[in-house]
Length: 421
Image 1: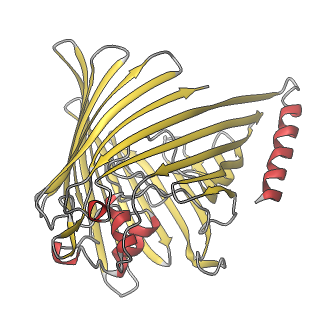
Image 2: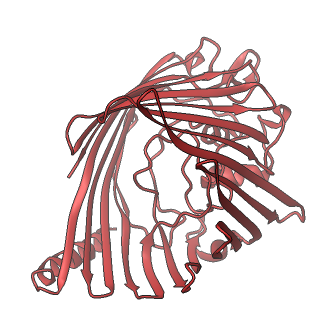
């Protein structure tokens, strides 16, 4: 990692010198974010049983962004420092616990590059209560022609029309409860796009990965995918084909204007290793409107997970689901979900958000509400609370791990301050 960082600093220096020339354009920016959370657990929750019913967590996110453009060529380099602290107690060694904590979003794990082609992450601190990494999240160079785009390096790509859930977005999708969507985590990939004169396009990409246990580059750990997009009578149509972790994926999506909003549907069929075919689907509708003088935005979304299971399997999910939870492709255990969200612009600087995610089978879910204030053009303050609900034994109410002991969400109250530069 040290040699890689020296190379990046050299590239930055050369880029800065080159940018002095009149034909070069460069941009520098970034952000600094700090979030503090106070999470409260019930007396039967595993964290409380371990000795801590209230946990304080802090997160630091510092990101420096840079880009250099010349004619039809562009290079990007983003470096980030991520730090996380928590006074949570270590949980007991229960088989499969890591899978379930990932599904519930418990634990603030830092990003690593164990699966990526290049290890561009350096561990700065690894204590009992605090961890930090310095890493490169974007490092790419590309050609942007009138009809052809080719980009190589660490970058991010998003496919599909999901709002809370995603079935076509195979590459580091956001969690359904994510409140910070400024940047997706980048992957090492080769990306190409051809744009047709009618507005359609074809995208092809290859993400080469390593086996996290052996560090060997393997095709069975990599992804090769393509997406074709066109518009038919005002309806956007996507078709997706992929070989993702050695499993064929066949998907498609549509998006159409309906009643001043957009109606979408995405579907994916996966031929898993055991010979079964799993079908996943999302459909959603969103629109903006004015009510009582306030600018409003709302959405509703249904999600069916072909890999989801019933309550009896929450404790020990099947391999196909467990792998996707650990890879960060899926974040839920059940089969069917409904999500609803509403945003209200109270003033040009004040915005209020509320959203709900509901597991339709076990009558559990989570409500998220938050308010954001743009103090200045570059400074934003945000505060909110996530409130889970549901009976014991349910996904959000608490998964039974022992007699009268449950692995559950806590009530999460948080505040965040962000400065953009």
